[in-house]
Amino acid sequence: MSTAPRPIPLRPDRDATAREWRRSFVNNATVTVLSRIRKTSPEEIRLELRGAVEPMKAADYPGGTVAKLMLLAPTSAAAKLFELAVKVDLSGASSFSFPLASMFTEAKFVEEGFPIPVGQGTFEGMPLGPVRKVALIAALTNELETATASVASTIIEHVLKVAVGNGLAKVLFSADAATDLAPPGLLFGVTPIAAGASMSDDLSALAGAISAAGIDAESVVFVAAAEQAMAIKLAAGPHFNHRVISANIAPGMIVAVAVDGLAIAGSGVPVVDVSKHGTLHLADPAEQIALPGAPATIAAPVISMLQTDSFALRCVARLSWSAAPGAVAWIENAAW
Image (tube, rainbow, N blue to C red):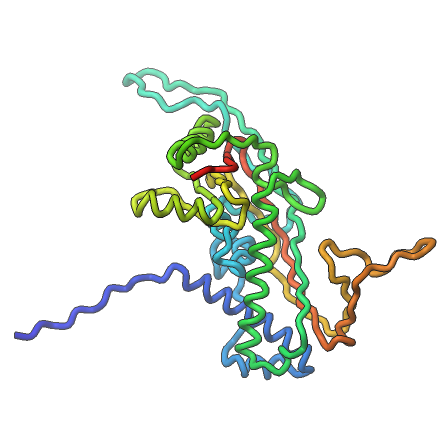
């Protein structure tokens, strides 16, 4: 007895568009780099990559410009957290006051024919922006010139992934105040909770602190150092309905973030450029190459891309973030 073949159900790949944008962006960066250092036309590199590599348009990927930067480092802790946050596109605007509802009348049961209570609620503004420039320069030797386009694309993707992921996490999960250069760290102004005797004590205290601030704890995400993140995942099991993210932060640190109270903003698509003739101060932080004075100040060490047969890969993007009061709680020196 034979049975009629049954079709396989279509399972939409929700990450396909994200992967396509990332592939397109990295390939386009590869075209920019190789065409400059090989002194050839971009079309030749496109043919070598065997596919169209023009970046997708903004409307092709939901989530706005911040999501595009995060796609360059999709496995980073910052990317995973930003994926869940409220996203605002600040293109064409300097800043935005994100409205937070406060003191609104709660819904109540009302007898038929009787007036419904009306309360005078207020909105408190949570400032978001202006966006800040996040940038990186990676100096690479010109051996990349002799590599195939696919190998060059892999190298460039790795450089962007590591630099973007580590750089953003360092600022995002800090207690630094906002400056003219960068947004505030999520831990700024937040007093750490004393560590408890067990994992359940610590996680409960974090969720309780956020709930006490009037924020729904159902949206809480736990960001933890690698050891604590793994311990939570192993102990909690598959039915634990809060996201756990491993981050490159201090051992024993656990940060709880209510993503309903976290907003991120971006402006423009990340831009990649390359130069073979620049002069770089190889330092972090970097200084001006030379400053006038008596005597003049010269930065060191300085290298010439031309003299060392190297090139500089630069990526620039603009973004910012803001957390509502009480949306973040954290513990340091957890002992489990």
